[in-house]
Structure formats: C-alpha cells, structure tokens
Image (cartoon, rainbow, N blue to C red; front, side, top):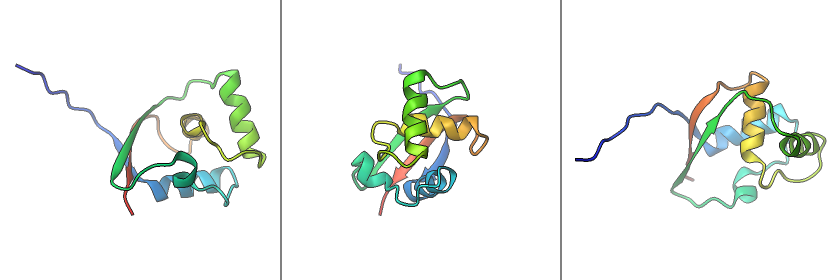
Length: 99
C-alpha cells in the first residue's frame, strides 16, 4: 500500500509572481515566462527558506537588482530573497503557469 503525503502550498499564478519580482527589485522589464521558458498548462514547485543566500546566489541577486542580467537560473534565489526581505512567507510554493 502506498502512503500519500499531504503538504500545504502557497499558490501563485506566474503573473502574480512576475509582478512581485518586478516591483520588489524595481525591474519592470522582467519577464518570468521568457526567462524561465515555461510551458502553458504547467506548474512549478519551490521550497523557500529565510536562510542567508550563498555567495553565488547573492552575487546573482545583486546583479539582477542593479539592472544587470535577466535573472536566468536565479529564480529560486530571487524568491528566497523575497522571503528574507519579508515580501513573501517561507514555505512551499506552487506556481501555476496558464495563459
């Protein structure tokens, strides 16, 4: 017999997450779907903590916030920075990708 585990998730539409990132990092040019190359009808999950970012992630977030780069390969770090800065709570996230 299989054990089915129940977990709780914060659920966001991709456009809601995109807006939060654009506003928090002052990057109105940021396009989540283009950067992540996500497909319609999919969902993505993330476990976000408020632990300090490592040097590599800190560098990427700092560059993104200063207007450099498009945030490619940095979404989890950007989202963890949102947690650290008190913009969103720590926890499990499900991002719904549907347009």
